[in-house]
Length: 287
Image 1: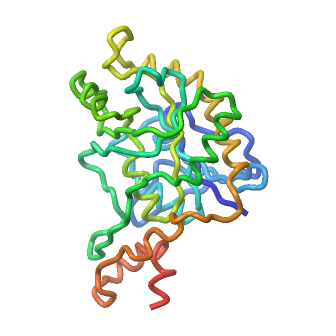
Image 2: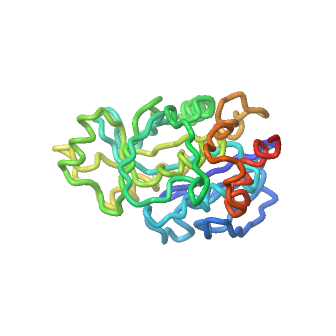
Image 3: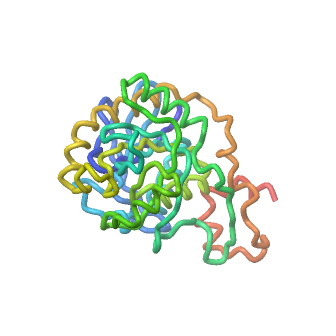
């Protein structure tokens, strides 16, 4: 059975239509995830849902334990992650209420744990194309089918938060050609790549950040109003994507960490082998 993870952002705290629901609480080598994992079945797929900010939206973006969240998904057998994220638009043509299936990121975060490697294990994974193009194609098709005004491709600036941008920052990112701005998809996407999980973002545009001369600056009230309208659409896109995802993967995501580790085998500490075993044992056991 296909096992698909869904990480819900602002406003998306549950997935409708799940059957055989079970709540799973995990402890990980990296601490506690944002919340319990909701495990259920959607059609012929196993779906594992996690609210990124916790139920009740109590965790700020820079407080999210991304490593624990993604490690838990890997532990539960997830091979694909659909990430739902509220974002601000940096382009006139991306209006509030639009959906963007991003294909690139710019990392402006400052103090987040962004890798499973370290602590005695040096590893480096390619991240030139941070989104799984196969998965993104299914998500885009599902968004079109759901009736969304959807933009295929775009660059997502990931800022630290929790404050919104200054006007100077917003205009700087626009000059870079970026499409949207948000606070949550990195290091989430980086960790998914290290964990060899396909990853795609469903970015829900809620506002024009603060660069737009004729629109009001971004506010929590405005963001929540658009999110409320778009939650049903986001759920429809997730459902359609789950239906489209194939039985087997053909992308390079599934072996992204095969040649990542530079540390000599005899120098890898036991704790590192245990912590990374969920990703690396299939390679280490062959040596």
